[in-house]
Length: 227
View 1 (spheres, rainbow, N blue to C red):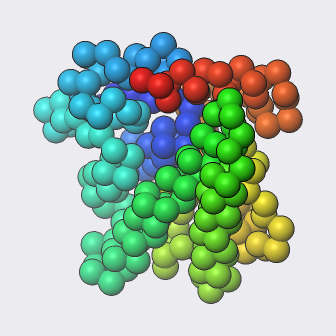
View 2: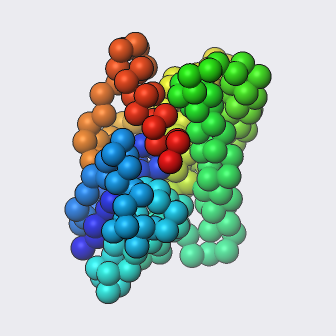
């Protein structure tokens, strides 16, 4: 059994979608980010960095694992699925997983900060992170024009990138001209376990087109940025 400490964010979804796709039993435990529960001592014992998600794997004596990519690798290796054991295909999966962790996630995250959360609109910063996110989307588009999936087969690399790219509207990243990314987004969305995974720990309401809800969400997010 696995305990998943999470919240409805792209990084949280990376863990829950992976658990769903691997058919692993787990219990989701909501971490209220607006109340800074991720900074409380009990949570910091699991992740000293104070970020979600974290899992506690009771099949390994209550082993805590933090960092979403590390969680995905742990779960894939535990089941022998979604991450090949052979060197070359394994490297292809891990490189696209690291592409998300080192590029797509940080750039989209910063786009969110400057485009949505900061009260001051610093246009050079907004342009910087939105443009870099778009460039990374173009890299994905070229790859997905060569292959159905980011690696040879469906893998944790697809899950990791999808959980972030699917939120492109919130980050203000245009998808015009990226037909391969659109095709891949649609295919991923049709996977029942992917859909179920992004409803953990609850179904997050769409806020992109709801100005009042978007403002409230941004205000809560701003509080967590200040701690």
